[in-house]
Image (cartoon, rainbow, N blue to C red; front, side, top):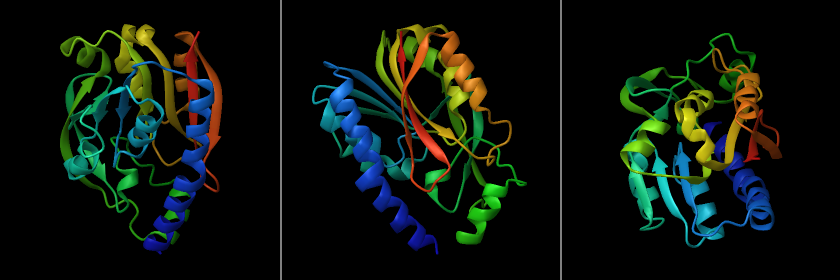
Length: 227
């Protein structure tokens, strides 16, 4: 069942979901020589998408799981890859590794989640609770360390840990123009709150300009613009 699920998921993502995102950015968000941060790069699908749209972009990719290094690096020489996560502060945390690596996360799984129980009927041992220690740094501290003055586009897909990444931006948030992040429409992660994300972004003058719901799945990619 796992392989069937992945075939279905990848087919829908590659042929429908990512195509819609690509078309929107091509039409609505022209950027010249942008600085793009890909937080939670995984195998680099979103990085590859933005490489096609923004030929002169420079990329900072963050993926703590080193097994994806070669896939990300071969996409472009303009990519700077960092094998740690972004979060609220500099610390060492446990990365939980799941049966499907798309759902690896720093977030704590809600074992009582109805959504998780349904997934476990389809995918055996979705949450294996295998963990490894990884380095976490805040976005603000990273930008100070590497002298990044501005981010044109910040993409965040970290399986329920998006709010912590935003908190780690702190006052640097005013130097970010666009954010695209994944929003969970389920109860899979403990203490996860869409309202907190929305409140933080609204407080920092970001406006929702587009949502992309993944077909038959309980999450969205949302695009925000600083106004």
